[in-house]
Image 1: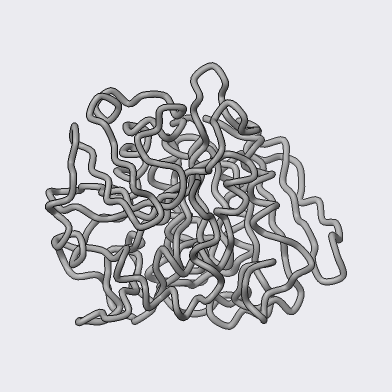
Image 2: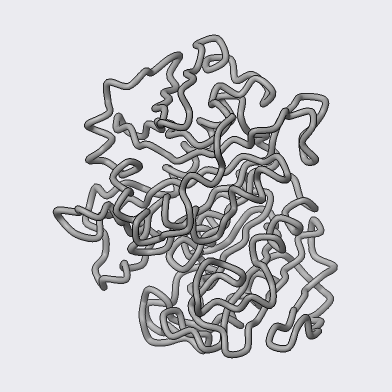
Length: 364
């Protein structure tokens, strides 16, 4: 059995540990790790088992997942470079897990995307998604973004290459930067191929820059995701280069509807609820919510109701493919994850619990 709490709650300490799950620099150092049948697993101290090549090559059902229970690093290759991805497999038999497809043993997969200046370890400690995964029987994967915050990058913290927009540092990614839409697709395909994930039940969540990346991924690859849950960073395409207060419509035109649940505080000063003139952020949160409702063909709503003293829920329903859009607005809320390990976050609701409950209603 492997502990699901070995990471603890100390985000600062975990950031320092981020070198263990870093991006390209660490990937190059670990290129000699076991690579069986085209899939590689790098074991941590908490996960000492290794994959067998028959499962890796054939993509066995999730009851035969080639990644051991607990938290491991799975090597995901893109364009000849291997990137370690933090993967958590619940330490419970698939047939006993509430969300397992008992005909195949397949488990749902949730991608957990870190904010700008973050990494896989920090987001995993921040939102405690692994604890819900253990209780409900789904797999989590926390990759790192493509762009190092600094060079050198001793803290091993990253930006995402969100299509068409600059990073929070204000610069556009240089030519040749890893395509993070392609990379997240590779992460999904790797875990499906390793027999750990049900391709019909893949979900993406993230905080801040990770929320913007989750939004962009749903715009680009709606065929890969069953629902998304951006926290403090929902977008519906990039801001118009000519008018950041407007959405560039052609930058998000998904071929299928994608259910959305999202959270945002109206006192957020990083990604302001009312928008700003930044080409990275731009238009208002409300416009992002309404744009997803439009793209999903929702014809009922918004229905607005109080949830707690400071939290209201705005819901759009009767949508194409039943792809509802649900928005939790936090009055006075900061740039934080509701219920997360942050002294400024509201504890009136748990975004993690609400996200998973929403995800259970959807599959591709």
